[in-house]
Structure formats: structure tokens, C-alpha cells
Image (cartoon, rainbow, N blue to C red; front, side, top):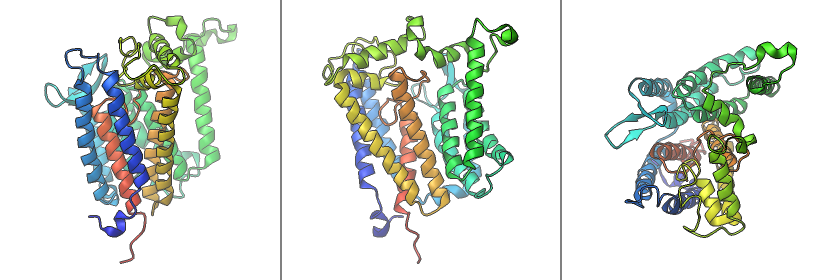
Length: 387
């Protein structure tokens, strides 16, 4: 339980920023989703309020419990995580061509891949903390990679490329904080990125030199639509009615907002449903259209303060495990924000990653609030009690 000594360590600025972002979520959803279900204009706003309210309870629960207790259950949590992801394959419900949800009732389902991100942070932090000072050789990187690769592969199979990439971001961020040799680990990452770039070039190239003809159309372990989404952002006009449509509509929405925006509920791309998924993945586009450059800069400023506070909590943690958990959460949120804003702005691939604390979604909100509760638990216990 908490006492006055630990309560003094609550990061009230972080809590204030969280409530501002949650308020912004309800505000923008009340305009972004009003025409999604015309007979129930506030359907998604009401549900988001339920997810936020219940999520705050989860966050409080996680904050009250000493985060070290989760470390003792690390392998049980890891096994539970794999069990949930396997259950998706066995009994999951399909929607929009993907099997990512486990139905609980006829109208409610959970998305285990969202919770898997938090579970892997909790368990991988323990895995790395036990290897402190033992991440200097190339072969030392293999066990951590395999540890993360198993749940990541199960998510990739759903298929969910976006969440798989979030796992990669968490893995990279936590490995560096755990003390992985920066030159060797960085070199591996650079080499992997180079190989991926070459593989994509060989797959899409139609006019290769003679000595490379054998590699033309190189097969990759991705669906055709996933591959196209990875590269279409470079020329969305090449497929205006297909994969490029989302990006084009998003750019029109954000660009038309100008400096001050068109005004609350005065947008066209979102209000007239031209912009796809505008209450989930592309909610930032609605924000840009209705609140303009000033509004989006304000939102991004709040996110910057939010990430800086998370990093501060990681730096002040009383032990390596707490630092790794906080760093994993920082990596997760940072990647989500950068990729979501990047894909809606047309400078990154469309990967279906929601904007944390803003986009509509029950599983996403609950997972985010659990992560925030963990952060608060780490922060309020940053001073080791001597008695």
C-alpha cells in the first residue's frame, strides 16, 4: 500500500498531462465519430469514456502494487502472454481480413496483441536485468532476440505488422538501456535495415541489371497489401483508389486545416467520412483539419512533455529492472506517436498503429493505462526505504 512518503513521489505533471490527453481524446472523438453511426452519434464517445474510466481504475491498481512483485511472476506472465496469443489463432474472431480479437460476448472482444506489448515489457525487463553486463558479444544477443521473437511471430501471423514493429522498437530500446554493446548491436541493426531495404528494392524492381535478374521479384514473408503499404507513402498518387487513398485523404485533411483549422465539427474529410478510420488510426488527421497547425503543435507539445516525464522516471528508478520497464514503456509510446503522426502526414508507411491515449479503442486504452500505472509505481517507489 501507499503511504505519505511514497505519495510525495507522484509525478503530478505527468498525471496532469495524461488527463489533458484523455480529455483531448473525448473532445476529438465527439467530432471524429459523430457521423460514423448516424443513428448513434455519440456511440464511440460514450464507449471511450467507459474505457477511460475503467482504464484509470487499472492504472490506480498498478500504481498501488509494488512493480517488483510483477518481476517475481515474470515467467508466468510470459506464458500467459503466449497463451493469449495462441488463443487468438485458435478461437479468434476475424475482422477486416485479420484475426486479432478474442470474443468475450456478442458485442465485446479483446485484442491480446495490445496487452502483449505491456506483458513483454514486464517480462523482458527481468530477462535483461538478469543478464546485466553480459550483452557484449554477438552471441549474447541471440537469447534476448528469441525471447521477444516468439510472441512477435505470433502477432505477425494474425497478421498485425504494426504491432510487430512496436515489439521491435521495444526490443531495441530496452537492449540499449540494458547495456548491449552499442557498436556491435548498432551494427547489427544497421545491417538488418540495409538488408531489408535491398530486399524491398529487389522485390519491387522491374528493370534490374542482367547479373541481378535472378533476384527480380524476390519473395518476402509479407502479404502483397502489406508490402504495398510499406512503400506507397513515397508515391500515394500511383494508387489513388487503393492503398494510396488513406494517405491522400489524410494529407488533404491536415493541409486544409491551415494555421487555425476549419473549426470544431467544421471539417469535411472527417465529417463526410472521406477519411477512412478517422476515429482510430487517422484521428490525428481530424485534429489537424479542425484545429489546424496550432492545434497539432499543441498536441505534439503535450506528447513531448509526456515522453520526457517517462524518460525522467526511467532515469530516477531505484533499480535496473524499474529502469528497463520504464524505458520499454517510453520506447512503446514514442514509437506509437512517431509512426502514427508520420503515417498520417505521409512521411511513413501506413501500419495501422493508433495514437496512444487519443485513438478510440478499449484494448488499446486499457493497455496504455496499465503501462502508465506501472510508471507511477516505479516513480513513487524510486527511493529505497532503509527501514
